[in-house]
Amino acid sequence: MMIRVQPGLGSPIYLQIESQVKHAIAAGALHQDDALPPVRKLAADLRINPNTVARAYQNLERDGILRTVPGSGCYVNAQSPGLLKSEKLRRLAPLATQLAVEAKQLRLPRKELLQLLETSYDHLGEAQ
Image (cartoon, rainbow, N blue to C red; front, side):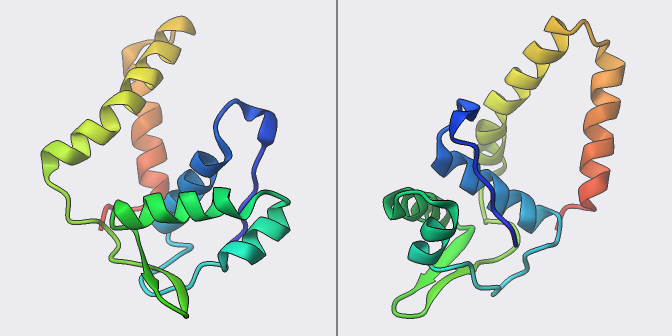
């Protein structure tokens, strides 16, 4: 798995790492029990502060996406965290709003936006 960050992107680096790990899991590039790179190694590879990587890993662990084994590292947990539907929707709502705002700004018809979303979802495969 290759993680890349863009410091000038306007999005915090730890969120970029979280997003890429989630995408890799959704796309099937990472599977349950796969090991992630150690914090220090990933930080050195990305030339960022190890605390940034640690924060991303901690957030992913808090969300049930990763699990940490002391002395062994971080591993992909179950494919889909056992969250209530209301919590899943709460987490996706800001992204949906942002996507809708962007589509409106670009004057993209609702039908085309929904088709784009369906195509992206299908590209990742069926939800586990």
